[in-house]
Image (cartoon, rainbow, N blue to C red; front, side, top):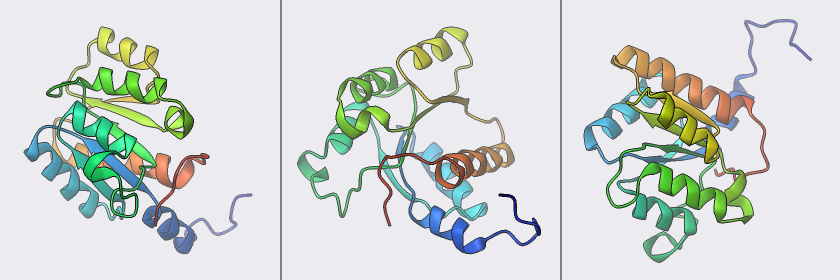
Length: 166
């Protein structure tokens, strides 16, 4: 049901949703990660953001092996933001692994984030099971909007059976 006073959004619910959302950003560029974190802060998103620099590290994190075995320190994310062009294994390889792994990971939302707008890449991402495909914005202001919309949907609006962290 829609609240009769839309200007008085339930900030407690929004805050709770924001603080219980964990995300894994798989991005090999330190600069792009820094911009992403800065945009999150600028739009007031309080998401617990972990990062991985390559496909192997992303898989190790998601599998909870090695240094990522302690889920209190390295929680299973509520959403994965996955670049395509990564060292070792590509984002497509990671996405294939996630969807083939079984269990909770198969339903984990994965948003591909790439500079590529090629139809071939978009098609391949969806064929492998991506939940969304976002072309990385050209400007910082557009990145802020993009970050706010991604987390607004996947952490505030969307309801899943997947993991939520605090």
